[in-house]
Length: 515
Image (cartoon, rainbow, N blue to C red; front, side, top):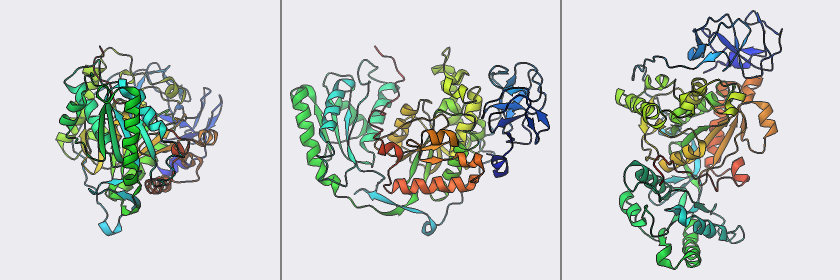
C-alpha cells in the first residue's frame, strides 16, 4: 500500500517502495523532463500512470512495483525509459505461499463501539440494504415473461408502495442446452437460490418454461427452497403460455407488495454489511489510489464486524502469495491455491485470456502491462487483514471478515456470484470509467483519478484521485469510503441507482458445455 507521503508528492513521478526499480508518472512526462526525486531525466514520452525505469535495468532482471515482481525486462532498459509491455516480458516465476505465516487476528471493536446504519430487518433476522420484489427465470425461455411482469410495475403503479424500491427481473441465458448434473447445473442453481434467499428481496417469483433441463422442481429440491406466500412459482406450459403466465405473475407480485411495503428502517450494527469488491477499467493509478483506499475502508469494516468479499480469481494471479501468507490457516491458503491452479491447469489452458498474460485493451491503455501488474492493484481492495475463508462461486458467505470468492474477472459475472453469496453492497473501483449497476444491491463507483472523475461525475460516487492530488491522505479517503458505505446501506441512492442501472447485469457464470 502506498504511503501518504508517496501519494501526496507533487513531483512528476511517484516512488511506491524503496526497493522498486520503477516509478509511476503522476502526470504526463515529456522527453527531457527531470525527475529530481530520482536523479534521472526522462528518455521517453510517458503518459500519466505509466512506469519509468528509475535506474538501469538489465535484460532478464525482475521489474518490481511495491517490491512485487510484475514482469521481467525483455531488453536492457536505461534509466528514464518508459517501461510497459513493449519492453517487459511476462513469464512464470516461483512464489513462496508461506501459508498462514503472517496471520494476525483482527482486533474487533466492542459491540457497543461499532458503527451502525439504518437497515431493514427481516422476520428471520436477516438484514437488508434495499427492498425489492424479485422475479427469477429458471431458463432463458422464460426470460421475456419475467421481464414483461417486472415492466408492468411502473413507478406510477408502485406509487402506493413507497417503501418498495422496485420490482426487478433476473433473466439469463442458461438453464437448457447444458449438462443436467455436475458443477455447471449446481452453480446455476446455487446462484438462483442465493438471489431467492437474498435479504434485499422481500418477495420472489420463479418462472420456468416446463421442458428445460433446469426443472423448477429440481431447483427447489436441490437448494431447499419452498413455496410460500412470499416465494411463488409458475411453469409456463402448465399455466397456459406466455400471456396467461404474465397475467398470473403480475397478480402474484401484486399480492406480495403490501407485505413488502411494511418495513421500517432501524439502527443495526455494521457487522451486517457485506461488501462485494470489484474493479474494472483499471489504470496505472488503481493500485495507488482507489484500490488501497477501498482496502483501507474494508479494514475499518472488518474491525466493526463486517465482511469484505474479494473475487475475480484471474486478477489476483501472480500475487496470490500475498494473500496466502496471511490466511487464517494452511487449509484456507491451500483452498486459494487450488482455485488458481484450476484456472491455470484446467479452465484456461491454451486460451487467450488475461490469466495467461494479456490484459484488456483498456487496461493496457491505462498503463497496466500484464496480469501480474493488474493483480497487484486488484488484490489491494481487500485491505491488509487476514484471509479468513475461500468460497466457490455463489456459495453462501458465512464467515465474517476478509474472504475470497472464486469468480471470473468479468464484472457482471463476478458481482452476480458475490450477491448470490450474500453481498448487500458492491464497491467498484475504476480508472477508465466503468458504468455499472447491480440490482438488488446498490453499487458504488470509486474513481482512481480526478480527470476521469470530472469527465464521468454522473456515474462516479467518490473521487479517490484526491490522494494523488494531495488533498486527502489514504487514511482520510478510507474513512470517507467507509462512511459512504454506511450512508448507502442506510438508503442513500448511489449514482448507478439514480441512473437506473442494474436491470441487465444478472449474469450467472457459464462454465459448462452448451449443446
